[in-house]
Length: 293
Image 1 (cartoon, helix red, strand yellow):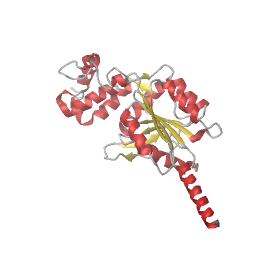
Image 2: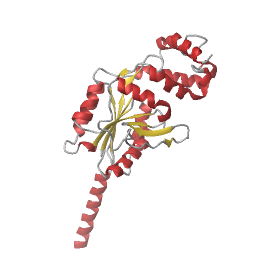
Image 3: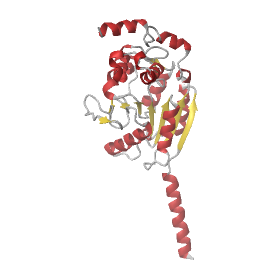
Image 4: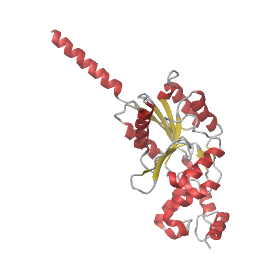
């Protein structure tokens, strides 16, 4: 009988241990950026704020250029043109590197916060509530670093103040890692993770594992809130986190406020289709011709 009771106790203990280590993974839609605060306040850890981390997508999540040339929907449209009809793509002489062209273009165009309170909410979570916060963008480091830094700085978004673990900075070494198809480079610099189109879910888990080792903090980002305007990205992250071996809890939030830009409208198409079925506003069209005599 004693052995039987011992077996029951051990079985219960093992079951409880397994339940405790099983990650809690959730997925939700949010219509307003301020809805993020509801999830932060539910899961915040005041004594150990670094146990709750925030990871934001960039384009059409915290910053946007819609509906102008250079925005995400414009880029998606051009990417489709490059496959369907390369002769109609914006950068005729650079059509083999649309992302490189866009990286240069985006340095000059104006980006703005997605909502009037986006910056204040980011700063409240990151600096007041002290939860480590970073940007994770599908952009690659070598093509988009300058544009990304410029856009964040112009909008006073500083993710260097409280990043996850140790982010590369001017005083920290940076490691460039090829993406999965060796077409671009990933990097973590100034609180921005350039994932270069690799699966964001696996990239987040990799980042957390590396930063836990570097910081010797096994509870870093015990719960992670991921925010992205792309339903595909939020689904990919959700799937990657299911039963993850690190035991990281996830709240994946699909930010829907910019869903109307997923398909270019008649209005935006009218602005992009100017000359010879090309996708420039007239000023951009003229500039490209001047730069490519």
